[in-house]
Length: 290
Image (cartoon, rainbow, N blue to C red; front, side, top):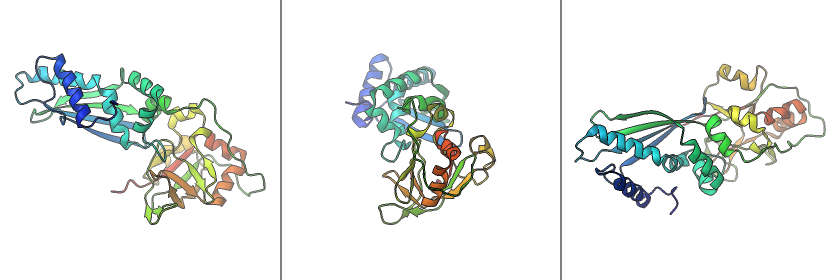
């Protein structure tokens, strides 16, 4: 059974292993591990909180806390990977799906978890649970695992004249509810590690394969913010970015952005503007919604 399928059966298996290692119980049943993931898209920080119940018949709380915390540490690869189901990689996959399908990536992720930062391990106020908190960063920690290319692919160029200028970055406003391409109705854009950008003819404008791996590890393919105050992103988009508005969203996960044909041409015609795609100098203004 895949360790990624942490359902009732696999959690029971994990519990059985842990119980066999210690003379006193660590997890009382398969439902004892609760996991929560939070993402700060501005910084790329991911916080994973795990909470495990302490068996009622525990005699020594300090020993129980230590054993539960250490047991979660040993199974962090499976537990964290499962929580990444809520982190979209692209329009079709979550980061969890990528790790499940990519053995090399899974091996790298397991190696990462040998030294990942554990922020804290503590009791709840009523001493009924043990809470471990771990911190990852999308760029410094996960990008080396998620990037599968070593050299960027060519960026399409517009050959016939398009009036434009050289810009320092690309800013796409996508905070409103937008038409869903190929579907009825509207919806909000969802952030992703590797979104794609298309024009209204569905010609591909930008994708992660077009970006330099070094810049991806610096700040990712596209940054996200819910604020229209862009001063904190000047290092990425500069002082004279190109502003445009998304016209629709696309993909099963609603992560891909569609912009006007005119806006796409203004980016692709100019060599300096194509460089912005190569260096991931893209910022998306989005709304997290409710």
